[in-house]
Length: 480
Image (cartoon, rainbow, N blue to C red; front, side):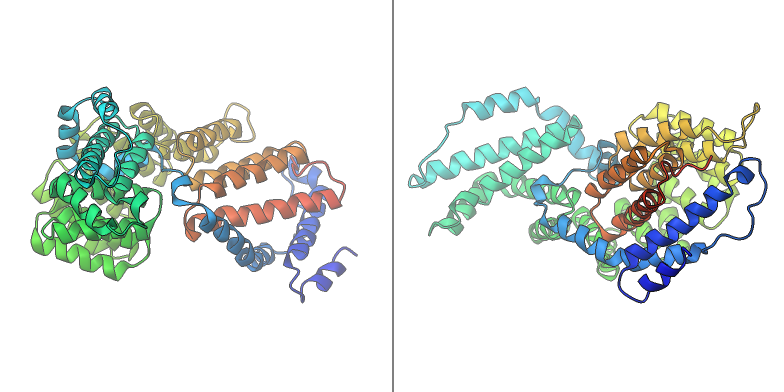
């Protein structure tokens, strides 16, 4: 019988083979009962293997697979790591209190063409022995690159902005002269020639770029140097706390938020980001207090109202969440996030048609926001079939999930949902193998073990299902 090899595999560390065997038992059972299931009749008897056994085997296989993937992540240089989507970067930048200031400065400061022309006018390859000219050239070039980088950021061209900030920092850090005897002296002179304000703003942007590429140590090093030079700058403390949060150092983040708020009790970004930390710590009431304080100080802070709506939803207070969304909509009726949150409220109430309508409005307001595409796909598959259909419109759900991955390749939840749907629709094993390729693409964009975990699990199971189908000489996993 097919059960005997399973007993042979299980006691040994050959969990992959055991999982293939379990999947084969499940596939054979489903294939044997295919006709009954098609007409809605129950199968003949219970499944041969409980779902818990499959989950147990996936959990046993996962650590080794995760280890391989994490090693691959470590091997990637910081410079080659992909940036988050433009939408994600903008959401982060807008959450800091200095956003409007640097944006207006960048708008007034000059065009990319102006800075490029000034950079082209500078002499190249100034001899290091002529220290004064070398320092002057490096400081002017670094300043122009920093300003052009900021202008690129203003124009939402973050790929080019990062290149300019990195190049400017290479000059200021005297990276090409690290082996020279006068390295520290030259570095100090370049920094002095730039001026503290220019130097700190460049370093702050370099810290942000490193954080975006998930170089947490590099980001922290930049921000801490900035804080040494500007100890009363609360925004720098908030950015340091954000890096600590991403590194799961919640206690250290808490102390930095407390320090920022002791310097300025009205620091909106400290209240906003500390509320995020408190939600991670499952301290919903404390998060609520921070967000309410932020709104009292800054009634037009859209992000605070949206986050507070999330807190109300987490506390299952839909009336409070609706009230907060209505207030947010008054501030910005064209906000993609407002429509998206409102759609989630309808979804929670089981009104999938209204939810999808709101998600579609969210897409229209900002086509680069990936969340409404995923949410709309879930609304589609949860909507009861109509007009004689027996199944939800899975093709439409797949289209929406593919769009989510297109606008934000780092939107990991979309890969899991999309993979499951594509696997259920695969007409042959070659189509099923395309799902493995999809998961591999998603894994390429993962940056943390948490992001890896779900996609890794789905990949393990999909590989086992395909291997099981191949062993049974089945041409498809689709039992419809």
